[in-house]
Amino acid sequence: MHNRHTGHVACLNKNKYALIRYQLKTGKSRIDGTGCFMLEAVPARRKIGNMEGEIISVRVARKRAAASKRIAIVEFGDGRALDAGNFATPLKFINHSCDPNTYLRVAYGQVEFYSLRKIKKGEELTCNYGPTHHDGRLPCQCGAKNCKGYL
Ligand SMILES: [Zn+2]
Image (cartoon, rainbow, N blue to C red; front, side, top):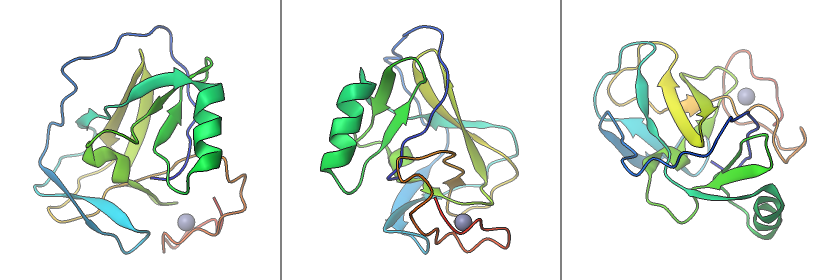
């Protein structure tokens, strides 16, 4: 993951028991760099897990984003952001796709990933990042039929 997301959050409630509910692994992605893959099948509309990270201000997040090539930062839309960069969570390796199999939900200071459809064992997890700090200038390599071409 190397983009920021925007979203909304009502309050900060850091979950000390951030769980990954399904077995995942990281590996070489066909889309970009390292990806996140399922080690088991997941039915549609299930929570896959919370992305662990550090809560920081958007100001700090944007400084960090400007200073590094790869980031794993999700903005909450209330001036705060979650930076998973220094955490071992496999969810930070979920790549963008214009035809994703997961979606990202930001709520109560948590970044959660859910399956959009049934995902097979071995499939790479993808999510539509939405607006990113690339402002539509980064060529998309997702390979989807409906690829929009840029992030
Ligand atoms: Zn695409």
